[in-house]
Image (cartoon, rainbow, N blue to C red; front, top):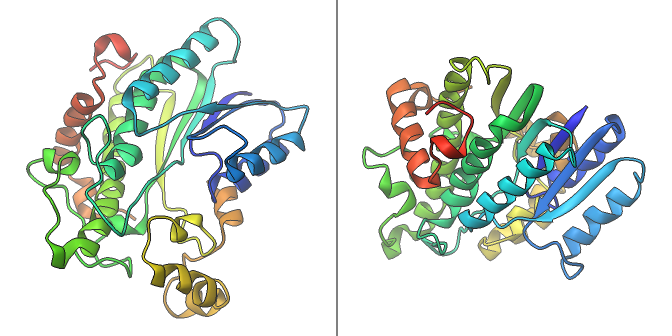
Length: 308
């Protein structure tokens, strides 16, 4: 069937997705990436336990820190070499699941000098995808995760609407947060990354369609819904949100779905599933973001099969 790569594979959404994938498609080769592959990470241990239940499926767990663009490039080169040498079959799908946010402080910058939420969620995944486009089989799919947060007014945590600014550098190098707007801007950075993912997906599909050698690959940005049991609600979040997840969101999920958020669900059905804002449909903005993303990722003609 081919090789499937899933980033952030020990996450709340990815682990049930991984189990579903291995159950339903035992003929695939599955490559799972995590930031920490050691047994000191309980989530990675959980992932390995899932893989152990499917010993007849070809699986492997790889370290990949999306906060380091050199690591992304090295990983992509290793996978490309493995496919060329028949260590792995050609790619069937890349599932860009990993994500980062920090709702309590920021901006948070990587060693690459980019704001971490935007780098992990968009730039690093774009780099990975672009570098591996030439290694897909006869049918390929790129799956990117957006969110209702990309649409102004749709997410209850929004205080400042998401936007793609005229100066795109502000996405990767935002100024310091004023104290009275810190929480609002922290969430806006996450929402901006999801808006960028959605917009870039349109540009990617257009460029793939216009390249005969790669037109068999399609990209899709999906909204998995708001996950009531997600670890994200307990990571880099205010204490009140952690309490709300335990005592309000999870026990009263059916009521919340009915009254406020029909997309709310647990990670298992979201992992098995795998509306767009007018701004994300603006082709001019898509192409500007496309060009800037190539600059941020340092992807050139020699490092991607796509004609750029």
